[in-house]
Length: 242
Image (cartoon, rainbow, N blue to C red; front, side, top):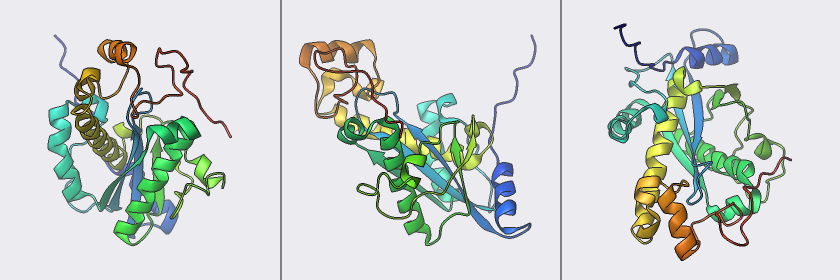
């Protein structure tokens, strides 16, 4: 039997390169990573996490990786390590009502702006660079000025986009873990008042038990009512492309 390949562990090499490009070699700088969770759920908020670290690194980087590759127990064990190591970790949310009104990508931008504004306020300075996981720069909706009525505080800069950034960038991996734990806890709390939908287990995604409860009981205020919930009068998941 061939040996199992080593687990992927994210580091700060990408963050260090971005800091050097921004301010020159050898200087200390804050770099942030951002990721989202809850984009495809039928209920609950969409949550964006942002984590800032100072490079060159201070202290040992926690053994972070893509949150989806970790068990719930491991994510929760890493959460306090991330808080102790990072310069700052902040979450931002957009509610189901905001998702229905804005569309999912603009709601992501709103949540990302809330997270960024909270991070800058906590740090007292803006990171010199931001890494965003994936290939879709949903933060563009905030930079374009089309969300001035809902965005307050500093707007995130144009990010450095990277597919599977959680596998290489410790800030992004840490942000994904923080966002996942935070949103899971929010759905567990909501499940106490709405146990039939099984949110403590399915976290608002379209599991069979969740969809069955929707048919039997209808939608709650925590459901994304403009999405395809399998009920009369609900539509396809919207998106705003401007």
